[in-house]
Image (cartoon, rainbow, N blue to C red; front, top):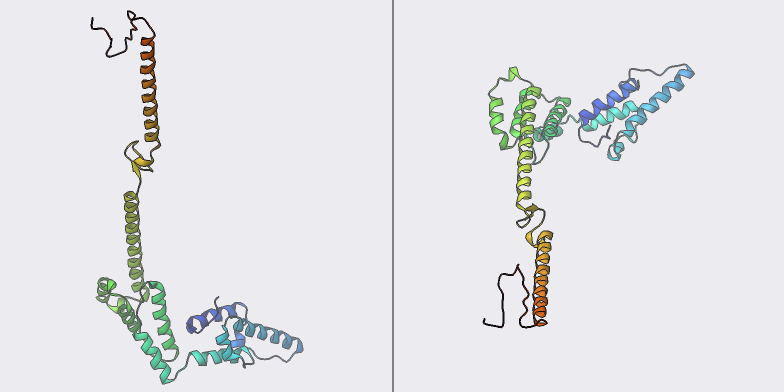
Length: 267
């Protein structure tokens, strides 16, 4: 359980009450337990009362602890916090009503978190005895959504408020967000795939991906082999020429693989 920092007092109250009840200590907050007369029972009472006070303090930030630093027990600390965060003055009522009716969903904000914020403000107003109907919550929620939800909001507004509750309204809103996220994910994947293909390297010499022609090892190997072959051919022609010079004029060296023959005699 997170420490209360002044954000959502109503939600924190519920969590804190459940925690104290789990340990059998809520009775020290609501005052349903009385101080016993037996010494052994007094010792046990004081230990549990101290434990309840310690649990409460452990779940408050330093700024909130400042409100209860002079409280002597958990009951007075609880009442002090309620007095601070459930101020029933006209100024506080106006302040919370204004926050409630002008709330807007911020860009990039999670929809569920925004819905919970609207509900929390409604609960805060109800806790200070401001009458907030369910229709008010629906209206504020619809007005706080961005224009991209207009079509869905129009279809929900056409329904009778007697037949729906907040959960009925929240379900299609969350479903719409899920569809948008899925569509956006597919679009991003398609764009990434297209970009990857556009930037993919391909060699038109060896017909393989991963490199360009200028980096083709096969091309370099083939060019090297051709160069070596050309050198070998030139050496064979030179040797043949030397062999012809070393023989008599009437001697012939026959090469059945030659395409042409040359001689120094016309006959």
